[in-house]
Image (cartoon, one colour):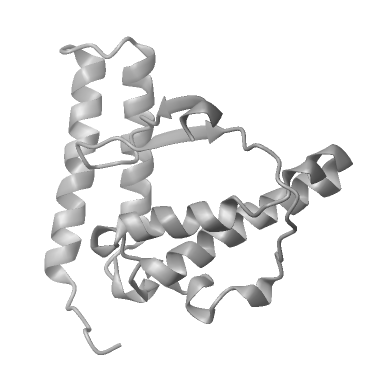
Length: 174
């Protein structure tokens, strides 16, 4: 699988409050001659938009094996058919990944998480991300007004998130 990797990019956009940065990877798959069913009915009900996958509780090795099996069955020769072929491959990849996750990753209703989120947090998050972008464009200075603006907007955002979590009552039996 290493031979198919075209690029790996660390995503640093300021929206992530964690110390860990997400990674994006592009791969070029080798063609196989097996067709793949991409119908929406192939997905279990819980794999559609109303649930969140719990990757922190997932059996990642099982997910890797299941996604490998499903992705290796996609007929990528259809890419030669222009936009329709690209759409087919895209749908097949997305369906495969959803199916692999639905078989191996626990899930919870979306309303179970971030029940306290509101428009104030949206605004603070956007301000923090904008300040982060300006800070990055300025060469990531360690001090000065640009650094202070980034630090303060990030701290305000984190503090507001903590405050909202603490104030809102949690409804476990929703």
